[in-house]
Image 1 (cartoon, helix red, strand yellow):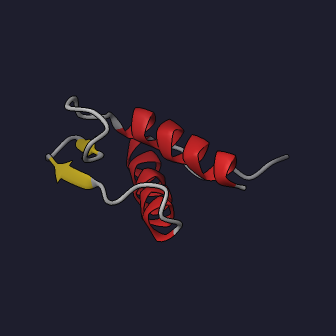
Image 2 (cartoon, one colour):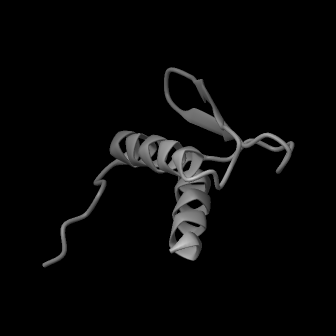
Image 3 (cartoon, helix red, strand yellow):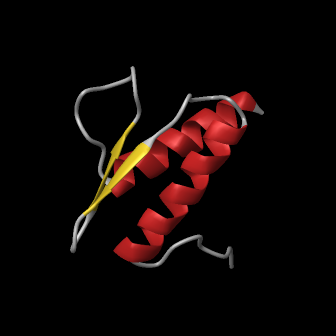
Length: 70
């Protein structure tokens, strides 16, 4: 059975943070900003979109960028 990277909203957001840092390290994006709220996070990628991304959207966006770079 495959090991999951996350199992709830908090660990999904933590995984999105890690993938975002990896995307910056690989120069796939210039940077990203995370706004922390008591019950959620919002992700912004400069020069890409004006709308904040949810942790789910950020995870999928960062994962896609990293997979396409390989």
